[in-house]
Length: 404
Ligand code: HEM
Image (tube, rainbow, N blue to C red; front, side, top):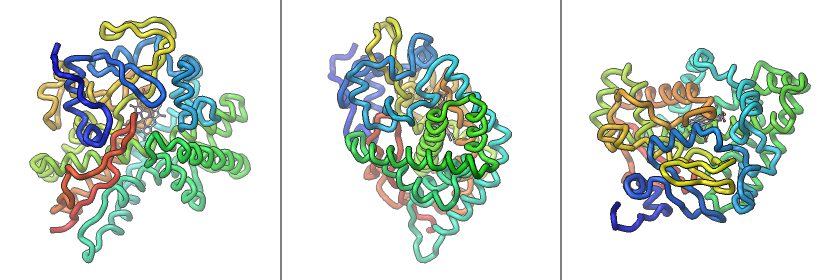
């Protein structure tokens, strides 16, 4: 046990590079209490404990199992348990979870996602055409590519009509960019999305299409999904389906810019790209902490007892750098063999959209590398600003020089 004190777990320098603090926690306080706005929580940082937590049958995802303090602190946030947008698969356990997950997983098969590769390429090409201006050699790859690509794909999948997308973009961007402290802004945008999605579901009832929302409306007519579960599922897919992938593309290109030898290797052999992206997910993934878990009975993780009323976060970033599992964990080293990383979670709530996210990242990052052989950072990497989020890790902007 080290005698030095715990490094800060909040603030811009932690957001910019949280890994030294996670290393300290893993070594000294692997399962620890952290203060969060409104309530304390457990934070789990070692890989083995992370897997135990993510797969534990007595750790519920249902906010009804949370303490009154946690629920008061969560009011107004997008995952607000009272909201009619909160009845989605990430907030339920058991049979209800399996039912809601089954309804969408048929759409997210790896085969179906491969079919979306061509569409992702078409969108990427047109976004990069817009950025590729000889008079403006610099561009922001978040605003110009990483943000619009996933949002367009998920809107396509769900069947959000073109003319309504600007409204969705507006509400989603408030939720994406607001700090957790801007509760009122988030609540307003969440209300806006709730109205937007209810109107969209009503539209699909009378104007069915070949899309996931129409399929969910059909299942709702057959009594398989409650109307609130339907809008909540659409909300979850829209939010989970784009913020995360924005961060994978952004963090991924950021990582490559800092590892020019790996960038050269994957340019020379594009078949390396899937391994490079898998390592990006481990090395600096988009999800800082998996979403909340609540004990339904006393549970011991990493020697600490957690009891009903406690709330638990699992640090995926810390677990993915655990030296007990990954050799030389702070080195970006594509092609690792051994235990898989936890960037998409583990257990019953493992990411539904993992295959889609990988296709989008392969297309976006692969095309940037092909089209811009002289790609270089246009700002000091230390000066970039990271989202101040409890759950996510991503950059607000990524300025690059596209041409020499
Ligand atoms: C769940 C990560 C992209 C939809 C999760 C979880 C993680 C994750 C860690 C588990 C959370 C937990 O256990 O608390 C990621 C990452 C992505 C990504 C890193 C991109 C790189 C997507 C996409 C979609 C999606 C593109 C959909 C279009 C979902 C859904 C769940 C989920 C619906 C809930 C699954 C359940 O509760 O059974 N994701 N995700 N994700 N993800 Fe993703």
